[in-house]
Length: 387
Image (cartoon, rainbow, N blue to C red; front, side, top):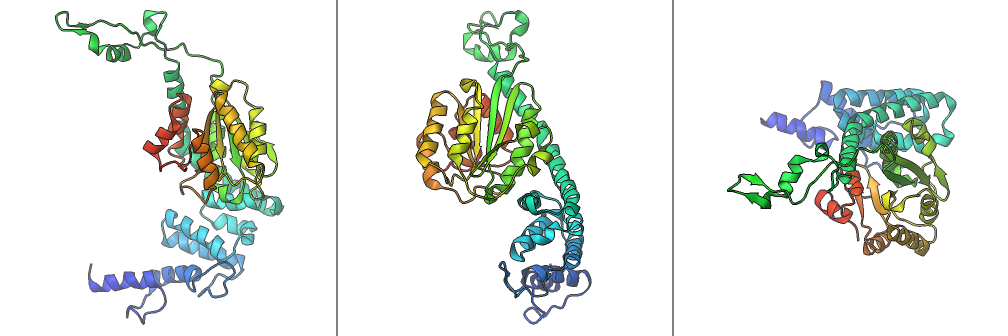
């Protein structure tokens, strides 16, 4: 890289004018610099008046800016800049304009913003918002559906294995040989199987009950989006009976909307308080077969209800044989701020709390179905569990 190219890059990084680097920009570089300056010059901060070139409060101007950044930067960078624009320049209300919704690069964060505005969204913006949400959901389904179904189906098959196969055709010879290698007789050049491993008979009935219980507080927006998609995937599998509950200070059962994750998302209402105890109490009533049930609480654990009662209910569920999993977030961003005291109390009960990425969630479901130690699974696959 020659000195001129190095100076050009520093000029784009530092912004401002040519005084510091002695490098003037033109053409595409000048346009790129202007797009960055409109968002980041002046330090930003919500409500700040010092914004360099600025975007003002004009929907057409913002829409043009959104088009510009899509021409200058890759989609991953565009998504970061859009998120920063909403947060730094207080553009939330402008997201209700149809021309804005048509200009943006759809992503999970924008879906979260739209869902938070769901109750005040004018009718003229609603169809554009639905189209954007459906596009994001379709992309998430393309990324996650096959992996989730494969992981869950494989786990159900493995959990159904038997050591007393009724027919020769039910014997898993590969696993049987591996399990009996210690019984190899060199003189006979054969293995004497003292233990058979067989395939369990494929069951048509429900094998597991899954309850997803999702915190709707504002910090959980991305988790709500991913949870809705996973809930729809799990609900499509006949071997699972899947329920989905969302909560703030009230509890709403959205199970009957699992066939359409877009409708499900528009049935949520982001923001508000949190009553985890009430949500767990409702979820307990959905569980009919505790030893075959998986309860997944997705929450930052800031409890606005009765804390001791919440912990008591979790203890009741685990004692009854329910596999309880607490996710501080189900997103690509790691754990948000969360209540460490509650996380530690749950960990002391054998229920670790940790953040999970969407790509790791299918394997987490497989581990839960096979009743593996979830704490150990988290230590191997994710960041160390909280508490």
